Length: 383
Image 1 (tube, rainbow, N blue to C red):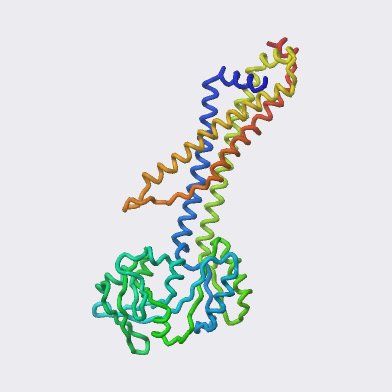
Image 2: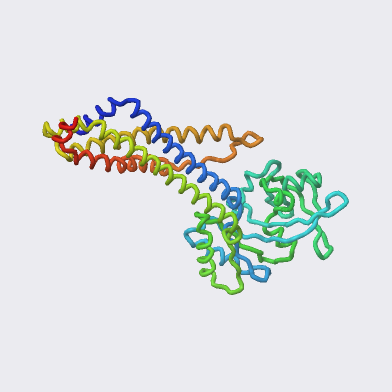
């Protein structure tokens, strides 16, 4: 194709100018990929650390009483497509001796095989194992260190009415949250029900959903499905409004940065190609005098824009991904782990490159139309 061959020749004839434009586009694309992915990763990391290992939706009785008929409720809720995990919990407050004092604790009873899908209990254990027998429990790292507990110890649990009982420590866990590690005693569902005299009842039904940002919509569907005035359905979004506001601010700032980067790329390419039309006006005039059409003349600069955009996008994507991996290598926590876990969205990276190419093609429209309007007689006469 003649316009493509001419475009390549024009680009080769001004190698330094071409190189600078490609580098400019590459820098813009790399910034877009780096900033967009970094903010997305930060958001995903914050969400994962905040609600990744916790219930997204919780069902309780409004008056805090024990829920009966919870098995049927769980079956109803589990039929909702967006719900991924449904777990029942039997909770009760108590005290345990720590030195010469007593410390308040929350005894939580679960069907541990199911609750593991929410809390990741198996991965959190660093000594012993999850309780599988009646009367056994596991305690958090902070509480174990405060009370000098080890696997196999008997732990005294004191209730508000002054009575007490003993639980055997089956394992020690670390859920990476100090308030949980220092307060939760995790046991089997039947053990907690017996300790607090709940019979066959539970205190809450906990759910995780496939899309954490749809938790409020799922909570509304759960409330409609259960259709009980005595139940209260909460979701993590209502309880973390400040976090959501911060995430929305991050998303808006990321979009603004990407828009400004694209605008600078468009302006840079349009300016360079407009100058090139002036520089190459004599050659274009001669080509038109030799029979090249106005459409073909305009296609020369459209091809230049696409070629520059494609080269800059490919290099920019590689630079952006390289910057991301460099960031995770040098920005680390004191223990050597990455400060932010990368969540690279291939579609976002590819989309950034495609958008840059389209922006480059758009930037070439004005100089392309200008070249189409050039009169060969006037160009040659004034040349």
